[in-house]
Image 1 (cartoon, rainbow, N blue to C red):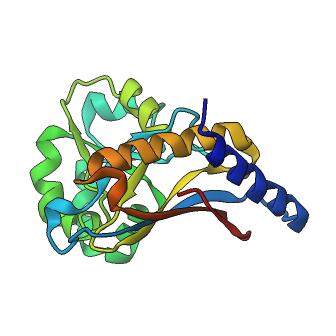
Image 2: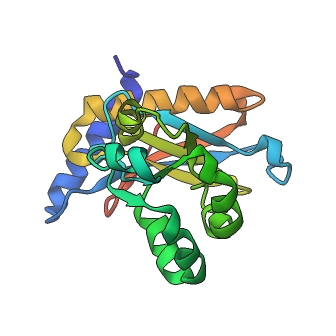
Length: 214
């Protein structure tokens, strides 16, 4: 069961959103403001991946760097397979690489390819927090991909204000509130002084007003 206050705020912003009568499904985001945290020190930065209990509303997009058997097996589970022979071309075509980095939420890579990916593509993938998760060449990636489909990133970099998706408006207030609950618990656990380091948290739809939950 989600926290009552969170549920009430989410219900309110969803009701406001309905009045606007938008022609597309709006994303619901959490906007986090931290306090009393030195984010210039990298060890204090938030960099968490959270599997949302009720999913993202729209599944995360997954790409894999793989060859041979793994590339063939993973093709039915992921959205994009990038072969080793494509790495050099991608490293030369920064525009295409940036487009891929922005279009896909998570990357997986056959472990032996990681050093090459780091050298050739790391300059684009690294700052975006998109460096691939390594897997053995004969791994079954189906389970990992299934989890990643419902996963979000909670990433502050060096900014005290940052945001993350919590779902889509058509998921309904209860599911969205459950997701928000999970995010807040993980956030508190990642901060040195827990809730004391959270200045405020707002929830908002893409085009609608925001509501404060903390």
